[in-house]
Image (cartoon, rainbow, N blue to C red; front, side, top):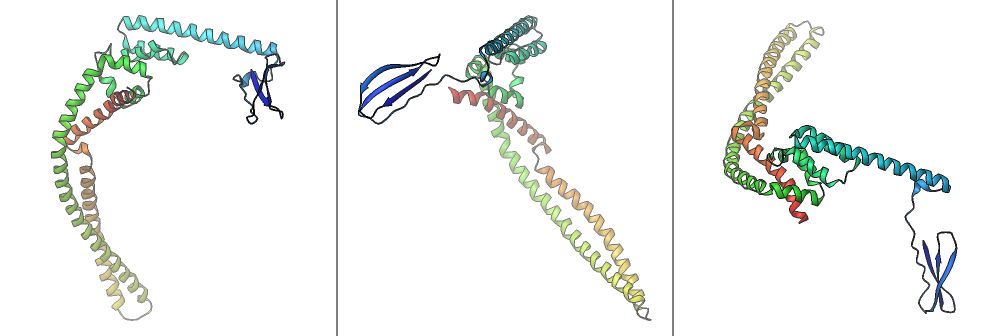
Length: 294
């Protein structure tokens, strides 16, 4: 439907309305000194129907309705199977059927909630909420579904959150101080081998250069000195190379210790702390998002 208001030069306003059959009706005349005004109100345009004849449009609409009916029938069939499996406590298969039903009707409230009923084994297990992918998926649910699920489990999740936070606070200080102490020792050890590796590698380069220069002069002089120097420098270069390889291996090990120390999982306390942080991150997604919406 289209409405148009025109302001004539003489101040008389004529309001026109375009009907569905294309006719234009004059609705009213008023006197108004305001500036010219045009207001339009268009119905939403379906681009797929643009340019089609009435017969073609009707055919397309029939096909759409037929597809919707088929989708609803398939959805209902899947939901029926899912409910039977849920009653039989076959949670894994029931979740699969509910998830398939959501492909046909993504906004189906019962199917959305039922997926979490299956994942939590009828709200008895909270493990599903501590999977990062599941937690992220839950945080993106509609508010109604989240509230329905959280009404069953929020108390236990909040209790877990407080327990994990308390344990994390108790572990964190000791772990960080111990990690810093190890960090200093490992870095000192690494610097020790780095210095010696650098010195012997530098000596290797110098002796190798001396050996090459001596070889260069062997054919350009009758003296035996270049030969002696080439042998001496070559032997020294070989010795420095062997020591350099030895210190490079020690340096590699020292660097590995430094890297491992930065990982929380390198110690028992660190692994536990990482576990707690992961769980709290999941709880933040599950509970924090819900709190923001409320």
